Length: 360
Image 1 (cartoon, rainbow, N blue to C red):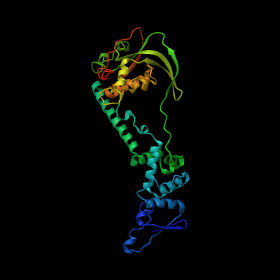
Image 2: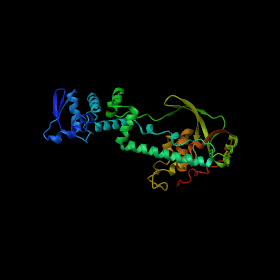
Image 3: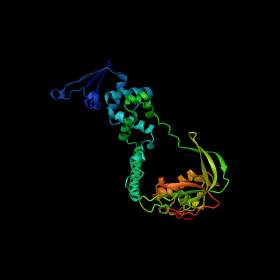
Image 4: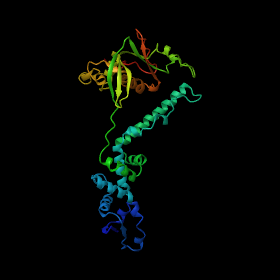
């Protein structure tokens, strides 16, 4: 096949031409059935230099990666040409790479509400709700694992399809600057949330931070549609208790400020974190896991024994109660109690005691 591109003639084969949906429609394949010496001629009013780059890639099919030019202007022209001629192998490769460079896996996670409704449905028992919500949360975890796998493997089909859904056509992406920018370089990652302690304020009287599971039977949930006990009664039977060391004024990366307690850590906290160090899965190993048997990893210093309540909640309660024991985080309540003496800890009927599996 002879192609006249703006006055510059190039020759190629039918098999190469057929890789372009646009050019494939310009060739009559039946002509070779009656004349084996037939020579098709096509005229294109296109830029010959840009078309030559596209034709080179079409001849190299299925190889694309490593052959794409990295000069932004030249690449933008090549992508516009590939989009015009419908050369999908190049477009799919570029869109997938740009998508994974521009996005983080968590941005593709569906909301929990798409898998389950946390509130009870009309006429639904507490037991049925727990089963339904647990099943929904399991599907959500499977969905998150699936998305993570696609990002880790850089699944081209997924990335190309999601690029179209998020950024539109190649023309739209070129106009917005997404292409060729994010094909050539990854987007800077979104900085993780930060918490900065601005000021510490002492407590005037002893304070205690209480946590409990709202669905514990002792809180009044003895049957369906039975009211929970008043909070004033529930806080006398908490699952866990930590002493408040002081109050902290905290600021996040957006400048938002709030007050929350700083907690004294206990020996149970120490034992829990020591007992979950890497090793043979059976406990501590001298010379291997005892290189840092302090709380440095969690508190930021060897001698520090206080932690923001939100950090303690995230690093202690969520891994032990929610991830290991299946207690839903949304079921946990917290309360700051002002009292001379703390209430007794009643534990959690659905989870193990903190520190009980640590081999000390």
